[in-house]
Figure (tube, rainbow, N blue to C red):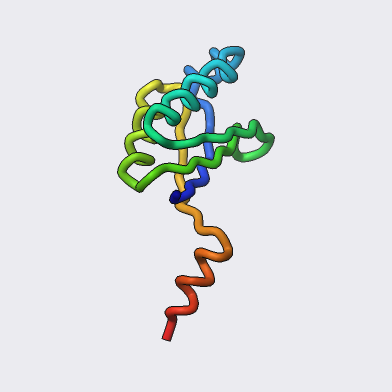
Length: 96
């Protein structure tokens, strides 16, 4: 399944209700599972408040999940599509 790295920052609304962050993460994980996706979240210090790794059946499913997360108003995210080393080597081997 395609993988996506998510870099996240809390919005003003999200930081005001930060005590609910674990509940929100559980709800998003459940939503992802309903969509056939998987989500792991880590809370961080620095430029981002959390990072996550998602796996989804395809880009369309991931986009739907990312947009659904955004509509809640608690976080802003930046998404990066990720390839494993084996996947990258397969692509790179086709270079001429």
